[in-house]
Image 1: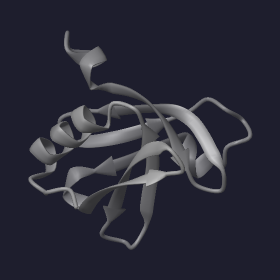
Image 2: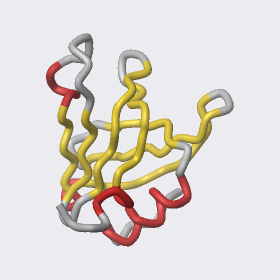
Image 3: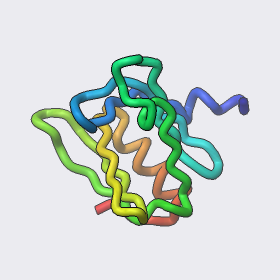
Image 4: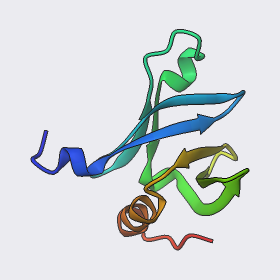
Amino acid sequence: MKNNAMKNYYIVSLCKNGILGGGLVVSDDSITYRTNKFTVPQKYRSLMMQYKNIQGLSKAWMLCFPTVTVHMDDGESYKFIVFSRAKLISLLEEKTGLKTV
């Protein structure tokens, strides 16, 4: 891993069939949500979202928690609760070339 790897790791919760705690790793070509929880469906334990397949980014609030939603070109959307939202959005906008709505 690069020296700045820790700067590109975010503690998040995926909001999909409940609140699923884990981490989001931002790399050069994708973002990957990871969790080791056995109660989480296999599909979401290591969910890679390549930038070329991301159609849009949006931000909102879930109760009092800041969220970022990643909209994929296959129609799927993944909402994450993330407290370092501004940093994550800035990094994702840089990597994808998209603007957050």
